[in-house]
Image (cartoon, rainbow, N blue to C red; front, side):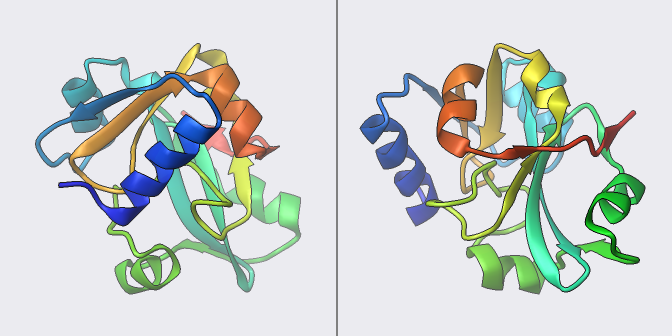
Length: 157
């Protein structure tokens, strides 16, 4: 059973002539579980985080093998405070539950999109596509082409 977000992603990828692989799996709640379900290394996973930076929510995508460096984001945007969106905010902003957010801003999610260089180290990107049971694996070059993200370093080990 696919979600409207999953269907929107599939339709968009098809319109953009992107070859991708869909993996249906049991619900996954961690990056490690998702990687195992997809049969891919954890570092190719695109971890998508909705973060409130100052007064604005933004979408940050980094390798699932890394952690979010809030100090780097605070410095870049010149703000004193960042925090992850809570469950209710995430639902209101995206219509999604934690762990199901795909690594896309417009036209999928209406959030500014930032990409950590760690994503660029792989030939593919794998991600939960609007649900905890649907993953997509696609070529990195196509992801970069259609996502049109601003590259900014905010991943740390």
